[in-house]
Image 1 (cartoon, rainbow, N blue to C red):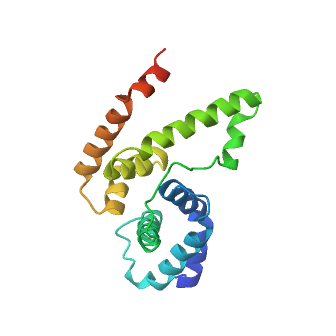
Image 2: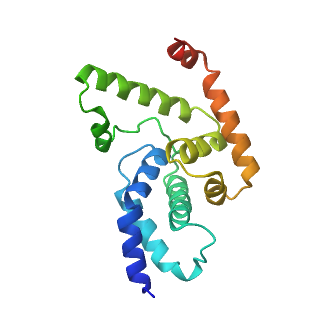
Length: 174
């Protein structure tokens, strides 16, 4: 059996980028490196409480979400997703596109993130976890501490709310 240090090291290797991306979306800033470190430190300290009821990634996202909320409370700032920066790793998907096409794609993503930010908190959370991070209903429910039916309902309502915004409909009608 691996010792706890090796497990955390492996998890860091496997999930640190996912935790980073989640925290960027969740907090609205790319300045989350310290929070990522805190997530894994807290996970290492709490390793004895990890009972395999959730996947390691889900457990780490729960820790990350709680730390982001605590940090926002401490700093008396509202968690905002309006400043989500363009991710360098997404450049690979734009190979062969012109700079103008890349810029338009980036602007559309920024518009989507801005619209997500304007939603109710429970909608934002499920949109980020399910829609952006691609987590399952079960994983999302575990992270948010709610029932799977609530996740499904909130996700459905959140997507519908986004689609019902006048500017979204106008820009996505063919």
